Length: 150
Length: 143
Image (tube, rainbow over all chains, first blue to last red; front, side):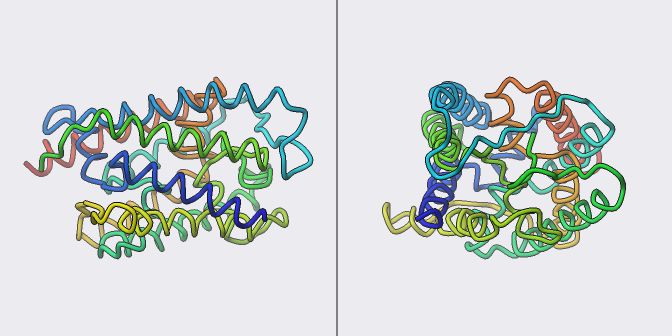
């Protein structure tokens, strides 16, 4: 049941990426190219996603607990440390070079473009390296289940 | 190369991404951060949620095929075939997203919707370096 639910959520998320055009790295790079062939579409994707999530989260949080799990797993950290600055800085360079962030890259993986097939294994290698470094050096960056993503 | 400005389909697709994030919070009580979910497939493991994460990722991978099946249209994309650059970019995206505890979905969508100051900082930084990178590649190095 939980596996089917999670598969369905991934499918809906991926369909959203496909329909919004974000599975196409050319649209991402053009959004980032203010001085050239600018395509503002990504701002509309973010707008639609954030508005729905903002309202939906608040409706969901009026419940005491989620449907399939004992409690809500929300990030609790509030500190701005070097990792929160350096990590996104590196991430943005890779995102600008390729036009891929993790969601669109995984969604586009099965389409089998050569660049995607090079990108995705490298992305997993980079994730693994960061996890290993975080685990060895003091406080882990990923502590909560499913990643402490904020 | 030019891409067509698609405000309506992009807004609708974005709303679907938001709906997926809300449903994941409703069902599992978790943030829909793709970098957190994908990196959770790799060791060292922190919990017993591996199969749930795999199911989510398989759903993402299945999406373009479901789209093609439902609409009869192929998914349009233009991906760089510069292998070395794509490998470097993949390493940066993977490393940076885990080091920064999130990516465009975890920080950019879910974090901003939670009004998280950490996510706002992360989002502003990765947007800034991404804009600078594209400017450098397209208008300084290339042409």
